[in-house]
Image (cartoon, rainbow, N blue to C red; front, side, top):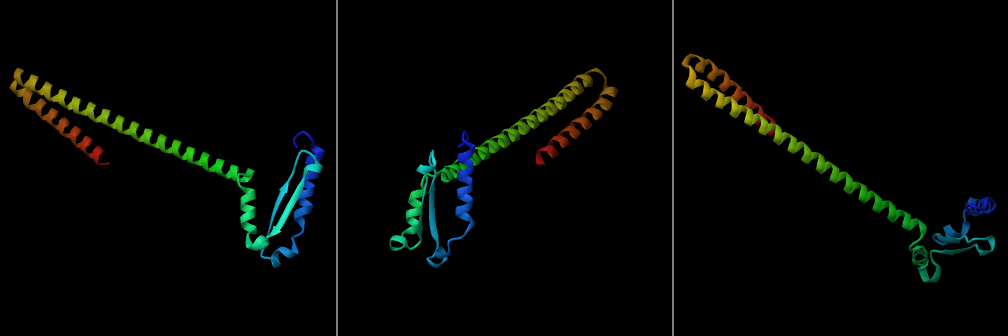
Length: 158
């Protein structure tokens, strides 16, 4: 159909004419089902139409049987499959992002702990050198260590 614009125009016109007027009998019969087949040429085209009550009320079942694995059903299934794949990929990215954030926070907390430990080590080293300097340095280091611990604890609770 892509290669023959005249045939494409004929198909579109046929659909427009065929569906422009509602079937007056379909409402009386409880609805109607149609299946239209378009082939490679005009001679291969045909349509079937039957009411819902056709074949002892099996009109709907006949339509469902004929439309199994149709273009539209395959299209719907493909869209569902793609939507599921996208959803899984988004969930995977979300988990990876959360893991990266958690790892970055753990590294930050570890660095803070090491920094506080270094301050304590310096304090001990200074305490052996002079008593007067030790008390001032000790107070400053103690304050910094407590402040660092308080910050890391408050970040963990967030």
